[in-house]
Image (cartoon, rainbow, N blue to C red; front, side, top):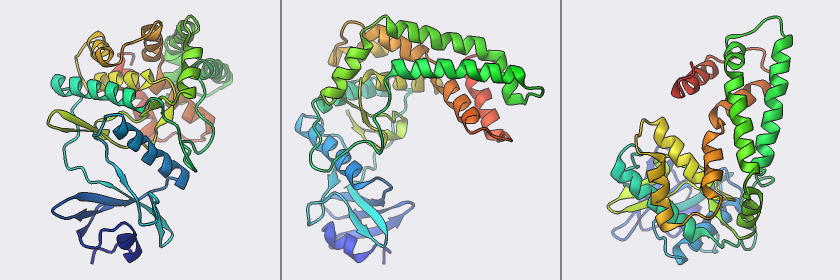
Length: 319
């Protein structure tokens, strides 16, 4: 016995398949298909949204996704034993290597094509991509975090005792705060605000979780999966994330080459390169961990946070 609730098997129509329990999911295989059933914490509206994005993408010509399958009642999920289950294609192809130039080119091309095919997304019925509000515009985030950094510095100046974490933040405050202000100035010199609002109004989908395990390679094709962090906005945020991930992993392909590869499929519009420059300049990883620590007002510092901050500084040759 697989341990999978019988109603899940029946509703998803896989009663005749070979079902096996794996770590974190169940496999359902026949000679005709290989699928995966797993638990999810997504709400029904989010599950509908992921499903509709994939179907929209397929209709527009990008077929390499882990498609969601419906129950007998036409739902992309089912409740059983207090859990929510979804069924998608089971992909056994390997994850991509962002440091391999050939694979990276395929990933960049695939992402540009996926972006192109997801545009014009209109969610129907109960589908809703967000649990809460849509993410703030970058101009708003950069401004807010720049102000928050200044408050943190003022607070640290008043402290009589400083932790190792505090010392590292103070030591590199000027560098990172300067980058925040510079990125903010670049964005303010462009039409980013209008572009972002246009993208949101016209259903431009961003993946939001660009990592190797989300981009799986099968021959000439790249399967794009894991849409849990997807959102509607200006899509070059994904390209920024891919470039930074490539560099973090030790990749050496020039940024200009990556951008040119993307632009061959989805040409960049005026201001796009300047906006991407601001995104790449902004110290996202540093800001994230600093805000996480100081916003929670910790009385002790997990060693993992100190080590992560050191890694971030070392990656940029600042420690």
